[in-house]
Image (cartoon, rainbow, N blue to C red):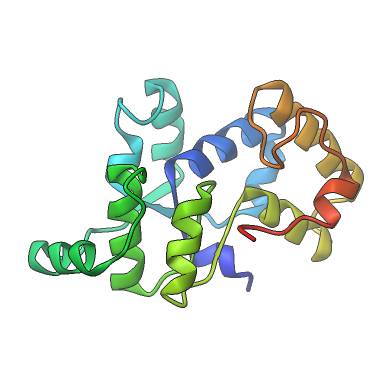
Length: 172
């Protein structure tokens, strides 16, 4: 079982999955029936209502740590001041549950790594899907380009290729 099948997904990763599923509905077979996420990730200030509605069907809400533990985790962590409140909650929840995290935020990823948690992003999941032969590199290259066309630059470039992904690392 791949690390990302039991991970908690951040808001941006949920949005990317939604875009991928709009491009290729059959991708749903590649992902777990339910993705772990925080309820706050599905709020109107985090994503469009239509996206949240679609994603609610695919998401299992991961509860936050109890308030006292949440406060302790957040005050003891040396988190970037520019990290969003939602990502801070995700950080604390991941530590509390000892869950891997799928995130597009490099600062969050580095903070999670310092806590010895497994962390990656959607690009690494696409790469893994090719490696485990659930998708071909040609299909992934088309998906990467379609994401880029929608301004979702999972590889940080407007013209991503399979070669870019093959050598890609995150968050390093």
